[in-house]
Length: 504
Image (cartoon, rainbow, N blue to C red; front, side):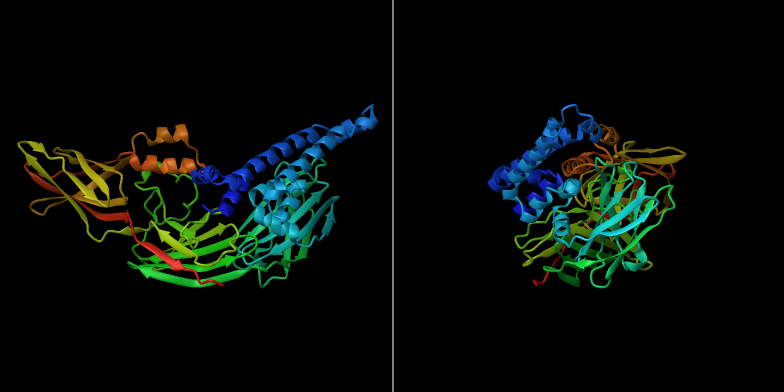
């Protein structure tokens, strides 16, 4: 990882294995981390002191000459923290540290906070029912649009407010996020971010405050400040290999971040959910699939943005991931990734790997009866060890117990048996289990996890044995040779697709 990526991770509170390894060997980044931790502790201690005193308590103090001592200590602590960290961060970010309502925003997204701080400070105001809604600034680059706001006369501690952006004015809106907090006086301060940006075609942002259970009207049209000093955009690049089409639909560079929008199309490419259907909601973030106990392969498709040395940039947030059926046989997978700002734009590459594809050859494993005992054959398919653990034949059904270990198989389906005379016996019932996985997940993991935990889960899932119990129509009892056919075999391809990004 590069130093700028590590510092962004530190500010975001992300301490992956890669970040920790970098901190061990990089003295400047290690100093940045120590100073950042000192700043956070100092601010916390100062705020704890300040928050312990309400306005009422100060007002009734019997010693007015001393009533400012503790608040002043708190302010001094915060200023000391700013001085500690200032040598290690940009002047913009250091200055923003003093703006207490947005400390949490700083830690989560320093690039966006710096851009908002540099923007022109406005005050567009609307008042209704004694509640004042103010928008302080609205900025946009080619990546994101963001606005800061405050609400006076109403406390949003119970999460009862909503900030509405007029989506009809934002053609192609992708997502909206909002964050806010309440100060000691009960006023609310917050921000709203829209992706993709309204950059280039919208001069005013229609923004509205809605309060649950209140029919007041707080609507504003606020001019957008375009910040495009370092904007650069690449669109419609593509490559094709092994029948898979990979496209960079847009790569936008801005002051607030870098957005990569991509798509992959192939009629034999199937990213799968737990039901074996084309994926619609399981993205690339560190989260468990809805039913991790029912899938052969968890590790998903991976798309990365690489620097000129081939090192991947760290995602600013997880991929917004979706799919759509583009024809009767093809599925298009779309991704929308957000990275930190990238200013060295020479030699960049976008890489895709881990596509799930169809094996055009059906899989067959032969079963033989010798001296009254059925064989337990094994086979090797796409780096996966497949074993027939047990085969039993009665007058009512044939039961095959199948196990799989490791490997790149993503789905097996369309099972049937055939005897040596060509008679076919259909599948009646199929059960799939991963013994021990549920207990391990309940003990160690939750639905959302950090990067390190997610990697542990992937390895754990890969190492555990997967088991099929297949029940078929009963062949004739005197048969001595059968073959198990699997007509649908999906696996993770080792194809790697790369698109080189032209320099500005």
